[in-house]
Length: 167
Ligand SMILES: [Zn+2]
Image (cartoon, rainbow, N blue to C red):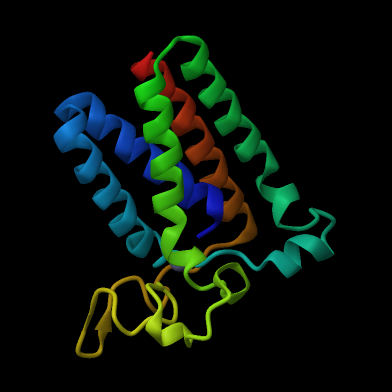
């Protein structure tokens, strides 16, 4: 799945955990759920960026920019309401929700290590792998372009609705 889907899911799980369980328990529970959610969402295939590009949708940022923008507005919304705890929970959840994909990016870490040694969802041998079973890999659900864009839209609506509940 795309960055925004992982990020919005992580943010919502973390902030709602903090809201229901309090900071000391809700933050670790929410961040743990955000991390695990990444592997479950990876069962859904992401529609190839190249095809979006061919059809004039542009690169990654162009497809996801409306979602990024809405997330930024939600952060400002929480900030202006002095809901700093939820704002920080959103940022941490967004990051942790994407963390397994970030571990795939060698350019980001400047590591000599091979992908298998990283905390990765797609290449890593070590995370959530028991025998031949690896959580989130390979993908199980193939989606069309329209379905992928619909998921983007649903996640964007979800972050707005969650923010309204948190305020
Ligand atoms: Zn992934």
